[in-house]
Image (cartoon, rainbow, N blue to C red; front, top):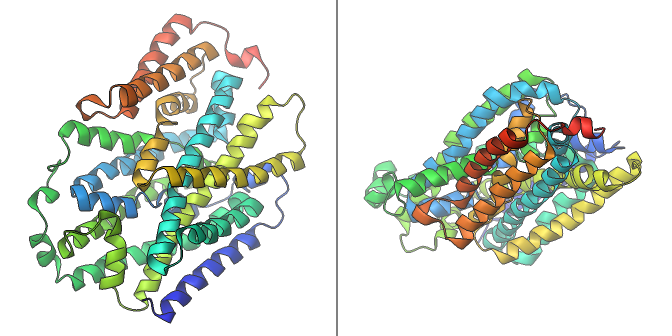
Length: 468
């Protein structure tokens, strides 16, 4: 049973987040403010909000679960994400100056591939965001049920309902201000959990002595080298420049603040992923026959002292909420700016755009709840959601940021080839050799974009075909 002080810490956290979110929601009058605010955030803010956005249930609870099952190989696989963030900081962030007028990915894609580029990016972005929000919603219900003895449904209503209110009203302003608080809490709480858990288990040597040897090797007994490399690339490519992360490249004061904040975030994720993964190892050492999904809850209930329990539970809740709110806001912006606006015959008024974005937030939340119910594992939901993004969007988007322009025929050919090859490899052939369909899809996306450009690259560019 939790002590009263632990419940009090969690309640204070939830009230604080709601208060900050509502405070930041004042004065939002158009979609631009809702999506990128004033574009004046400094590197520390970009660092905190980006880190809070990507550190969700999959990279914490899901990581501990997989490390319990497979060993440290999952930590190394997750470092594919860290490597990607470092590459983005070095090569992508400095080029965002040319896109300072953008509020969504579609604003970048339309310059390179015409209206289809905007629409496809909007559709892919919304589907991806719903999937990832679904992962966080599922984790949220699980956290409230496991730690606070609140039913899963009521946990989802309490946690998801809270963030829907302030994200709907405040957009990116509310998201950023709450994520700063959430980042501080999660950066403190989860390392504390590991320290106290290791002490409770008898120290580092005692933990290591009770862990199977294959859990401490790469690729271990559960994955082949091909499967490990494929998983590394999946985490590297799956969330590359997804809507909320690209949003962080648009809200910075200038490209120097954007690049530094992104780099710090990538570097921070390296030890953080190791910490959350090691929680799974400690749980394995203490209780080998434990359900892997219960690795972190078991440690919280058995190894942490009063007071620290409340901080860690608040950390886990904020991990889930911060990621969910980021993707929720990004989904509503993508839907409004990249799907609705291009399909309208007449331009929308600023108030109409804002209203559409807010209404879609609710529908996006409902879709995420359905996704959470359908798929049990948080990290499996993440990988499934990646299929709606990486095979179709990563290569063309990076090319567009670097100034590449071509016909819509070339673009759509690469999108179709990437998606079909991923789908056939993943669900038709069942991932031969342990190679993920996402990786195959990205490779075919690159090849087909190159071949199609050679065949049709001299056709009239979309920028000349229509006014953008």
